[in-house]
Length: 208
Image 1 (tube, rainbow, N blue to C red):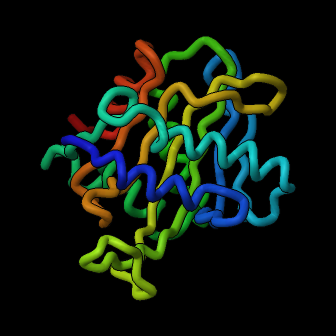
Image 2: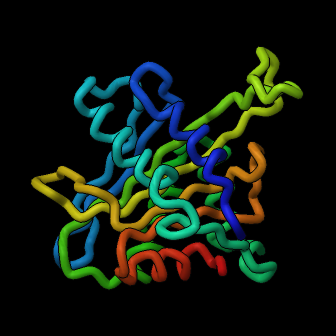
């Protein structure tokens, strides 16, 4: 699946302090032995300005990275969308806006089973909502809205300090944002450099 760079840039313009599109942020800290060392789940607006800036930078890294190189689109296979699938789990997490800790814990466990990482890292999940404006025939934005795009951004970040996530090494955007619209048949996966973490994340998500 080819990603339209303009779609990704449109989203990232809402990932600033003034135009913030995120309502909640949740995540888990993983120790060097691969076990959960703590979790968090909070209203994004309750963060300090510095914390907002740091987390916006992490979330924005996923869609803003080099399109169709570091960031690629993948389709969920039919067999990966049934009962008990990660796709169904992500749908539930997205629809509740991160307000169900039990679903999030299942997701963290899925990642830990697949990712064999011998270092401390954080799993971070952002809940976002974008009121997609209509575009006129002159390609200018109109006041009317076409749809409300509700989405998740996930990021896997090595820790740069105690409970301090560094730059993400892998991540995802779900549902995909295709032709300026929600696309739950696809997911956008980010992989930094030539590491294997993105491949592991694809295995967790069940996409190809």
